[in-house]
Image 1: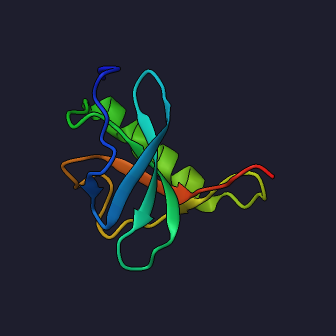
Image 2 (image 1 turned 45 degrees about the horizontal axis):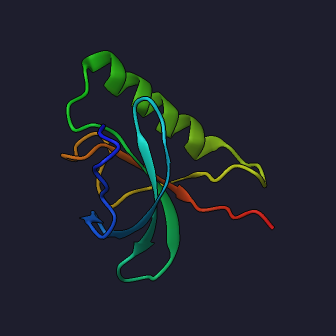
Image 3 (image 1 turned 45 degrees about the vertical axis):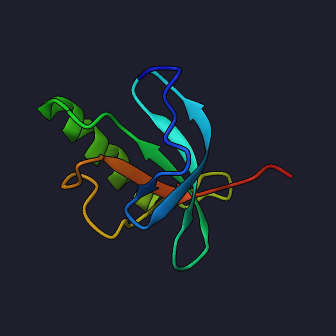
Length: 99
């Protein structure tokens, strides 16, 4: 992922990407706003092309997040479609701000 490319302003599924929150070796995390519900969420976006092993690891991450209950961890929200069937693999989780 290039440091010069940003997806801010783009719509991914039902979310408008507001700003980049962070970037790692394999993904970018954006603050997004649901276009109908106006709720905020953190969206982890992966490269479009994933190898089979990467897809399996991404699915395990989504499944793990979906079952976590902790005040400092934003659980995985269910996207409108499967994160694995999308052209843009993604996880959508609660956006937690520090106080």
